[in-house]
Amino acid sequence: MEIILLERVGNLGKIGDIVSVKDGFARNFLLPNKKALRANDANKAVFEANREQLEKDNEERRAAAEQEGSKLEGMTIELIRQASNTGQLYGSVSVRDIVLALGEKGESVTKQQVVLERPIKAIGMYDIAVNLHAEVDVTVKVNVARSPEEAEKQAQGIDIIAEMFEQAQADIVEEFNPDAEPGEIAAIEDEEEEAVEPVPAPKAADSEAEDSAEDASAEDAEEAAPAEEEASTEETAPEATDETPAEDGEEKA
Image (cartoon, rainbow, N blue to C red):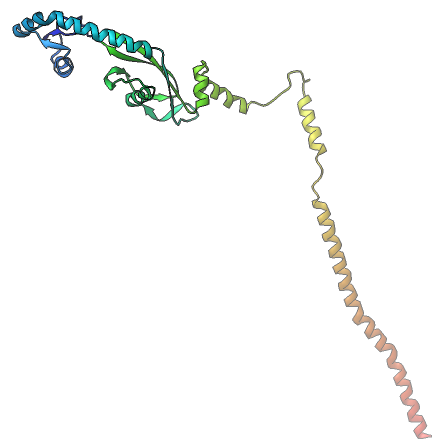
């Protein structure tokens, strides 16, 4: 389809150029957004009659966009999001999030002006283009981090993901003394093992043995008591026997 451009559109051309584009691109984007007209005789005549005014209006819009862009250029917005230890976000940052963050700073932009090829899914610093006019593009920085402290580090140029990886590696590396002689570390470990006080378990075993010995002595004493009683009984029995015949003899006499 042939169209007449009413403003500069990417690499297609500038205002007033007649170009050929795909039908879908013209119907779905250029014509609905009043960026072009169908290149028929009636529209060509209308454009030429209003060309001067159209160019003037376009110049005014471009000047306003440049003024707004001077405030936006280089602006940094911080977006705090939850993320894993590998830096992957639990979710994503979309165009809507960027528009809202810019609005909180007093800058009014539309979703159509923010150029984001795909949602942001990891922490880091991102340069995002904002198309304020067909001839005016600015760049804002989006600082996505897990906390304000990490956002500040990223703003200083520190790679948070690399820092987290280095910290994880440091946690698993054993400490060592580079000036130590071979085998010195092992010797120190052996001395520490020897210096460990013995567990007081044997004392408990000794007390148990003493208790067992006392119990055994008590049992022996109990068994010996009946034996002593029997022995004393046997010693007294003959005396009773001797007395009995004597009494009988006296009766006979």
